[in-house]
Image (cartoon, rainbow, N blue to C red):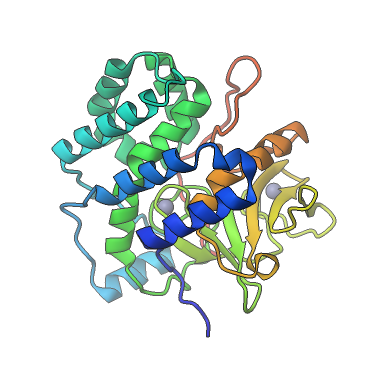
Length: 306
Ligand SMILES: [Zn+2]
Ligand SMILES: [Zn+2]
């Protein structure tokens, strides 16, 4: 049977995926408990003030590619508690990854509205701001931006599209929040490429032989590699724009996976892609970068639909 798109992972499915990834990847095993606690904290966050649109309005948005996430309002108390819980959790690892917890709390409280409006379109610019204001390393700043904002975006996306099919959308960016993709999955039964938004977890189909970052469809310059013994995770690369994304092959893995977990479990692949000279098309900062943070052109405009 065809699985519907989108399909939202439950907390139990997320936990099972974390445990499975920890078995398969020794590096990830070290952070298994931390990751489990973060997903649990995220699940506890509840959305408020999100309205589900009428079916016809949703279809119209998907056809036209207009942003659906215009009026996301957060409960500021829930938000502040969530940031604090995450900071405490990271702090409790003893790895001293958060040099100034109070600055981090202040930063999120001062910028919550701007983050809602701007994080999807310019994740890298936000990493730079958070890094400069708080002393967090850029990759930890990126992780924290995701950990803080993901449950709110996911809750909003889920409440907006629910189980309704997103097939009318054929754009290269997320149909809900307009973020550029960082990961996808080749579906088990038909090999269809399904993208999942790193920020809001909305899913949509995208042609397999097309670069989502530059539109290139030339098979000569599109390719992928995987690490030895790890055929389930493909790093798909485009030699026209030198960008990459990670795509998990459910046919090789013998199951459909929870992409938000698989992504965290395969950050080593991101490091290799960078070493090979490719930039993340999503412009996420996932691995420590050498020297100053590069300026990467980011756009808040939506990709073309079609
Ligand atoms: Zn999204
Ligand atoms: Zn490209």
